[in-house]
Amino acid sequence: MTLASPEKVVLGPIAFGHFWILGVFPAVPFLPIGRTAGSLLGDMLMIIFRVITPSQAYAAIDLSVIGLLFGTMVVSIYVERANAFKYLDILFSWKSRGQRLVMQNLQFSLL
Image (cartoon, rainbow, N blue to C red; front, side, top):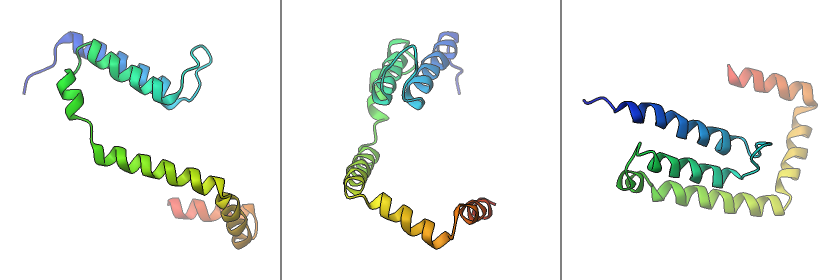
């Protein structure tokens, strides 16, 4: 196993930190860019800084995961438009008999 070059060790975390800030937080006050654009910009920095090669980046793409995420997003949009989340909220709040019991059930399920 060979160690990475010092440039990759320094520039890799910089590119990842850029992705983390722009990809995780939807709107950074000083740079209003979306999550998708922030993620793509971080990926481009990884290639520009030569942390990974373009062929390694292309090989890392998993089309089944992208298809799963796309399908989940499409379904969630239609479920939201049908106000199903509102009905589920009403159903769960009725079943829980109040907010305090919901929080207690969440605490016990996390343990």
